[in-house]
Length: 166
Image 1 (cartoon, rainbow, N blue to C red):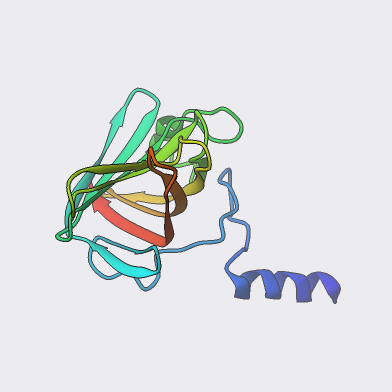
Image 2 (cartoon, rainbow, N blue to C red; image 1 turned 45 degrees about the vertical axis):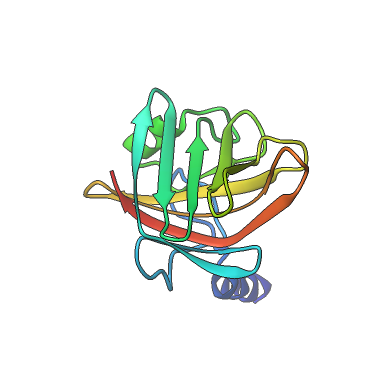
């Protein structure tokens, strides 16, 4: 009875482990409108264009917007040290990448009042990227991170969702 209750609670909370060789994730792209949505410093944001690409062991997602933000998410290795590109190509999904270290990064170029760069690989930065699916060349992922600029100002990106073509 306890196992059944635990499984039901995990499924309802969105934290149910995935089948197969993938990582367990606690996010989804449900509710996504357009190619990308997120909350940036508490305000709704939407991507208007972009793409994803593969280079060596890395998967990179670039999302542009009409409001002067360009977001880049990059994953090289998962928590076990496996290539993210290999995991995607072998359909061993989902895969979750730590954006606060050498295995991945997240960044925002803010062009609203000049040029200001925020990155997760700065002191105080952190976050995760979960690549959920690759289907017919379209990559689906969710993300959240804290990115820091040179002045130490933190930009909070929450509830990020993307479904983007290569």
